[in-house]
Image (cartoon, rainbow, N blue to C red; front, side, top):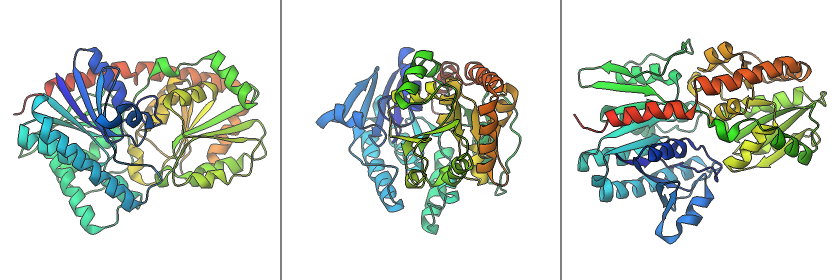
Length: 430
């Protein structure tokens, strides 16, 4: 099967972005498929450097076409929109020129603009596509207060509707997204509450409507266990390098530090542990709220690593004790599928959440995480961390549970098999 993958935020382990597309793509290549990716270098500077003037580079059997479109997490809303539109034009041009030689397209959103070249490929070349919802646009942008224009909202909802309507299948990154998308497909306007989500096997969901039968499947973000597996030598060297004794509890926050990441809760948690010298905070990442963290006045207990490659971040996970996962308290972020959580459990780190999450059933079943929702979540997170710093037996049990969850449910290899089966079934247009 010849697969074209449209993903503006594609990153390899040499970059600092999520490697979901890279990891699935290289597994598909190993199974005998060909995968071409169209992207920009927003989360992986190495890509554009290697691609050179030709704008092409091959990574582990994946042919990557790299646009010179600039994107950084600190961009203003207008700058982001310009970046999205510029890359959309690049991707659209690529699809119109080359779409006929592929059997299937995968369009990964966000941004939602990736639906446009996928729709163009279907119209011009009859190229079937799978629409992958990594981020529920435009809902997430509206909830975060980023998308305010009525005209842009209207256009975004229309593009989203068309993306679902003409797709062969819809891939979701969390079971928490399924009810929201089903409601949209069925033209219901009621708000999806934060609720339930029983542990399931990520099976295909079929939704019958007058116009077509929609096919949905959860292929969540997942764990690269080999890269993140606990390594006592890495742990010892990194802690020695950073001057952190083994009896201290290292809390790791990695990734984006933006509006949607509820950095206020993180700041509250750090301040609430100021009297506990046994708790150390490590931060790796960047974003518009970075300076709020940088202003913390605890140099002996707070360390900033900046933007790191996936390989370097893996060493931090292998050296830390607890993984901090925070998002806005809007209902939409219940559905978020945070890469940092999956990286954390692959390394055996228990997770501390600042809000309710669709992952809750697994956190409880495997006893590998705590949800600190309600009033003052930052203070609650601090209390949990103080407790874990004194209870090493519980910390060890949670670590074992995290590793079991990574292997039993969220292994990238297991989910790649499900993803491949869905793609094979989606090649032929009705």
